[in-house]
Image (tube, rainbow, N blue to C red; front, top):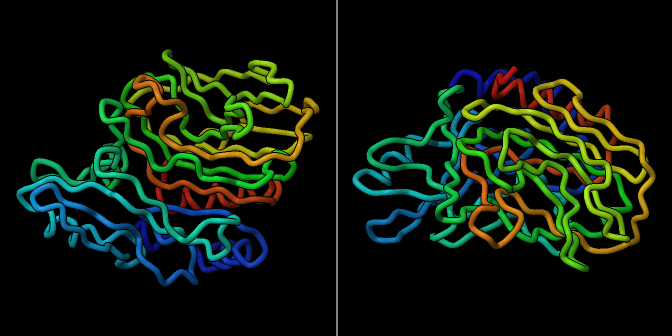
Length: 292
């Protein structure tokens, strides 16, 4: 767990500067914002359905408390706390899901961990339609710049989103990182005419491999980065009118096969910023995870 202390002071200050001027969210087992003094998550156990609020110890989730609380039963994460102080309009500092949809953190006497990184990570199960959150409304994001950064380790090929935007009006996808039933990540957008697969780009990925994925989005340019490398970029002009958009992670649709299966932990969205800021955030997250 020494990697929890590996971020430089200057990087902390950079992230704190973002929170002073921009809104968004950051859900992570790592403490990524120096000024955040809140908790990490709420864990519920199966034996009696009681809950415990879990904080951070030395910059990482207090996994010892999870192990103690969940001994002899199963534990799932039902609430995550947002580290960024400026939340999007209409939101509080946390998100919650029901027990049925909550990702697993402890099962069969074992803390769930990312096998490559050997650190705690929540397991999302397709069979239970797990999701980090659904319909997290981001106001008029289509007319503003936005940055998305997430970690992901997929255990099966599914038609789902690592991170995606869903248009509230019309219900069609504006998907940033859409996995398919084969080994590709599709990066595409649809404009207000609902033209399918506008700007579609498919990039190969491997199962049982941990990735740091990030995307930058604006009306003028979009890009996709995997493990620090830009793998797709587009400057197609989009016809995007003001609207409310819903952010989802872990799934895109209500059908069972549209739910992700694997480990998804850190999820960051910043409303505003630049491609340079995208790379800087990506570097800070990677300092913690050491994915590449």
